[in-house]
Amino acid sequence: MKPNLQGMLKQVQKMQEEMEKVQQELGEKVITEESGGGLVKISMNGKKEVVDISLEKEIIDPNDSSMLEDLLIAAFNKAIAAATKMSEEELGKVTKGMLPPGMNIPGF
Image (spheres, rainbow, N blue to C red):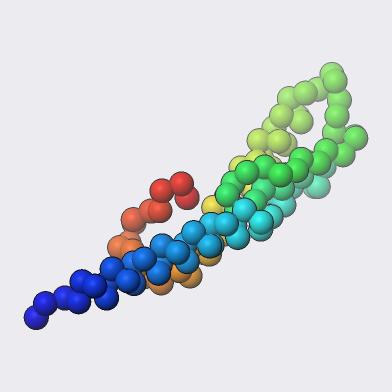
């Protein structure tokens, strides 16, 4: 039995178009993560681009920059994890099991 290569090609092209659309939409979706009980907030879009950083005034101490640095690292890491999860979920809706397990999409 011959596989329907033309049908498979059309299906792959459709999936590629849908993925491009989702990737564009991910640039518009923003998540915000925080650390230090909300003293540091990082907003990132689904393309893992930082779109905003918010620092409460009480966290800015010129004599103790290490605490602020630690809170920034924590907030960035949480934002990256959340943006990655959001990207994987949205792109997963398009691929619907078409990619073999463990195969990642470049850039995500």
